[in-house]
Amino acid sequence: MDEDFIDAVASAIADHLWASNALPPNGPQAVRSASQPAISDGRNSDMDIDELSEVEIEALAEQIVTKLSPVGSYEDIPAEKIEI
Amino acid sequence: MSAANIASALPQGAFLGEILPTPVKDVVSLMAGHAPNSVKRRSAADSSKAVDYLLSCWQILPSFSDKLVKGPIKKILLPVDYRRLCNARLAVIAFQKTQIAGCRPLLATLEHSEINYSLLKGAASGCILYPERYMRTSWDFDLAVSWEDLPTVEAMALEAGFHQAQRITESALFCPANRQLRDIVEKDHYELGFLVRRLQVTNLSPETLDAIRTETWTHQFWHDVDSVNPFCYAAVDIHHAMSLDIGFGELLTSARSVSIDNETLRVPSDAWFAAHLVYKLYWEGVHNYAKGLYQYADLVRLVARLDEDTFVELIDILEKYNLIAAGYHSFKHLPKFGVELPEHIASFISDTQYPPEDGDPTGLNDLGDVWPKLWGLR
Image (cartoon, each protein chain N blue to C red):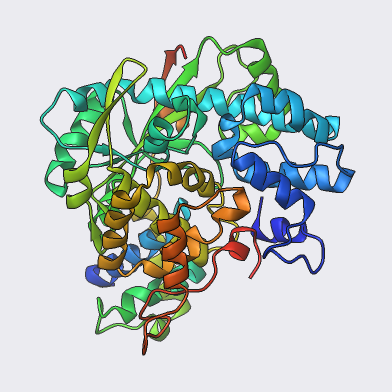
């Protein structure tokens, strides 16, 4: 899988996530829908998500989700005591 | 409350033009800071609907004075709805006071630096439009700085105790940000990702503690509510542009200092503040259902500051960024809030109701009336 393509799709997913303040959705369906803007923007001219097999999309999804996955939990941001 | 829920709360065939359904009339009056015209106990359905609307406009719940809450609001609402509203108001006031306390060190550092910054949106309107700063709430403190100053200001925020963060899916909690995700997002956007402090408040009043423990609606703001010291987040959102095609250069040049609660803070000029408000109110309003109604509370209060000269400045900005239609569709609804429009604003509405010859709606950024959409209708 070419890195530029992964970056383009990851960027499209990040745009989507930014709008919804959410973390990366899992699964090939999310990749398939989120990749469309990246492809139509011409950020990837030599690959089309629709030409990929389900197996390839699964692999792509896994790579992107790994790339964008959250680190840690809310407790990793230390609590500070404060008066108001 | 979802758009569908808000819309379904309206009576069938409700016309949101000049004749407003009772709960809408109540909300509109309260947003403007007034008691409703009729202070009689509402039906169960209207009482519940009014509180649903008000909770969807939680950003302005702290603006309701104690007199308004304990007088007219108590009279018109059923006890169950009144309790719901009071609990929400207490929780949101404490949330905003925590935001203010949490952002104070960063704002003090900025104020003592050479960096030109300005508060934006709710953080600015709390300083200039409401009797007390905490009376206008928002999810975060929005700041404008130039693109060149972004790294310095982010470093200041980290030094002041903020952490790079991202939301945890379907929760109101934050975890440390994935640096790669932030890099991807920030490359194509005009603001930094979240910067938050997790703050355990040690002196919440017994009434506030009770409110956040009993009202689950408040748990979008408050966490660990059964502990001695529940926590919420203070968040700053640092912008370097208003949108992808509207920069902040002129806004920052026009920014001015205000003194409030022994702090000196910078806010936009009234004209730029109004332009940003119109842009957000209209542009977000027409692209969503049931989003941003609370911003009318700001616009209602801003009118008194828009004298003729300031309004001319505002129109210049709106013209420059092709937002005249946004101005028309935003200002024309102010009379519904009991606002008597000065002549220069009334003339603007009258003049701009006709689009320019050969203009097309898309080219004019004219996506139609924002009012029904703010209430969750088409």
